[in-house]
Image (cartoon, rainbow, N blue to C red; front, side):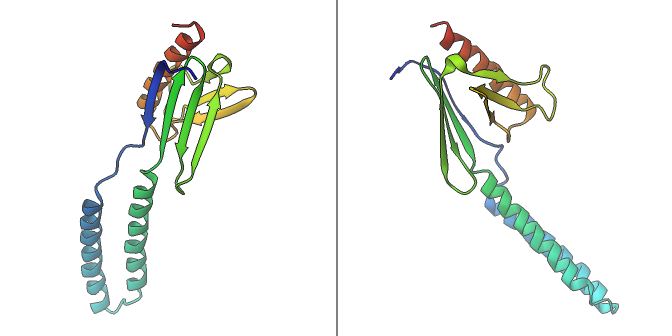
Length: 156
């Protein structure tokens, strides 16, 4: 195995707020909803309570999903003989993809747009990378990977 690493990057989504901060925000939102609900109940509109509680529950669910989604990552390692992508998915499983850098074609819009995808093509199969990155981060990584792939193909 070739040990000369041309590119070694770990791609992660932007980190969310800390769990404690999310709990404080959720608590504040719950208290505000409780006060507003109490006002409606005092005026006889008690049916508002389930809807307000559902709003708080959905915000809590969204915060939890954000924390889970932040655990995703893609570790990209390029040597002259292999391009290895190790993915950690949302459910905790890992997926390894190993490609020959000589046959990899990188595709991304130039100039990159908000919905531009970074796709690696090899032997008719496409692999998306960095779907969770901001467009500028994705474009920067694509440029670094394109340069490293060129170096791998030309023995530099």
